[in-house]
Amino acid sequence: MIAISVAGLSKRYGETLAVDGISFDVPRGSTLGLLGGNGAGKTTTIAMLLGLLVPSGGSIRMLGHDMATDRFAALARMNFSSPYVALPGRLSVAENLRVYAHLYGVRQRDQRIAELAEQLDLGALLDRPAGQLSAGQKTRVALAKSLINRPDVLLLDEPTASLDPDTGDLVRTWLERYRAESGCTILLASHNMAEVERLCSDVLMLKKGRIVDRGSPDELLERYGRDDLEQVFLDIARDRSLTEERI
Amino acid sequence: MIASAERVWGLMYRHLALFRHSWPRLVELAYWPILQMCIWGFTASFLATRSGSPAALAGGALLGGVLLWEVSLRSQMGMSITFLEEIWSRNLGHVFVSPLRPSELVAALIGMSFVRMMAGVIPAALLAWALYAFNLFALGPVLVLFFLNLMVMGWSVALAVVSLILRHGAGAEALAWSVLFGITPFAAVFYPVSVLPRLLQPVAFVVPASHVFEGMRTALLNGTVAWDQLLWAFGINVVWLVGASLLFSRQFENARVTGALLAIGE
Image (tube, one colour):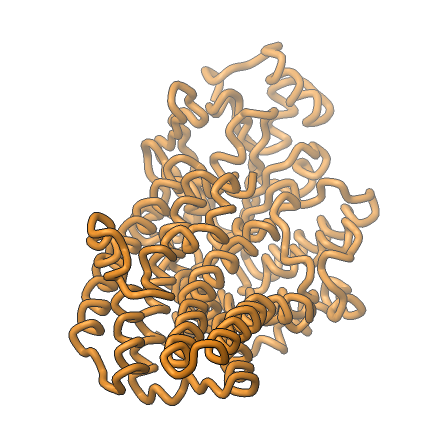
């Protein structure tokens, strides 16, 4: 079963082609990593997958729904987290979660919030203003928000950016557990190669809006003869090795 | 339908919770209408003591104008500023990837605009009654139609402002506070349309508020309801609202094409 199906997706801003005809499928229950340097097209791709941005060409089917004509049906079963999009800082954590529980039509809201608070260790933070939390606490709250509707597809843009190694590890462990328990499909954009190696079953390497390589982390390591994804990333970024003819 | 109402309530809850945490925000809602009422109320009282009964009647019309114009102003600002709050908190990225439809966003903004307007106008109306014995509610049930028309006009202007913010980003923020003041000279708030130069009277004619205020003066001075003026106000409001809705719809979709939704706070 395919959760996300992207075909010939492109986005043009004037003369600039930010995403250039990319195609990929993400099976349900898997985690896909989107890797690429700055300006590779990761954020633009995620924005199109979320319906925030209308593609210049191509199509996206999310959980069987065409994002061009039926995006709200898909959005109700998706969620998103990014450290670059804030939650209202003056509202308490519980109020923030309640807002999104309403927006996503969650039944038994307080029970769901209590569940998430327990799982993500947010109990002591529920009554605190979201704006007064540390970076790690904010990330856990953002993660709780992104799981409020028990999404079938979760899009994460650098979920552990600016976290200390301990908190980052907690978040990754929690994501692994959530995916295993729920069968959720995760699409992860990250610059943290160790994170991608650990979480992703498949990786797309993006450069200048195009997919320049793809495969599981192990396949990529073997193909490039490297020990870790960071070296693979550098090979691709600096045109040291393979290109799309090997895909 | 229930799911839609729940999403609208979700966004309203987010803004109502803000007031719970910040009493200065609540005070600010009533501050300006009360200040206006004090200034114009004492001015009207002063004129009435000097010039007798006709000035007292004109003073009543002046107070009615001040109060009712606040309905439009607060409705417009309430809606525009509620939208700006989302930009300022960098929360729009989450809101727009939720299942909330653009029409539900507008419904939530209208709901908050109504709450904000009432929080500003009701204290000012009570003050007018307490200090100047001016009872706005003595206008009777027709007052509801005056309110409705003025609110709708405020919402239309606010939708146009939100559309401009979607197109031009934070650079258009100042319009949220200033745009309706530019219409004031043509809204016949404090004087009849006939006072305007003949050349400007057609401009006033296409402003819904000018018909409401002509109707208000008729009701206050003659005790009758000018239904023709109310009908004109209603008809022009429909045109304004449809136009503003089309503009918003177009700008929202355009923002999805240009990527403005991703960078709207910058």
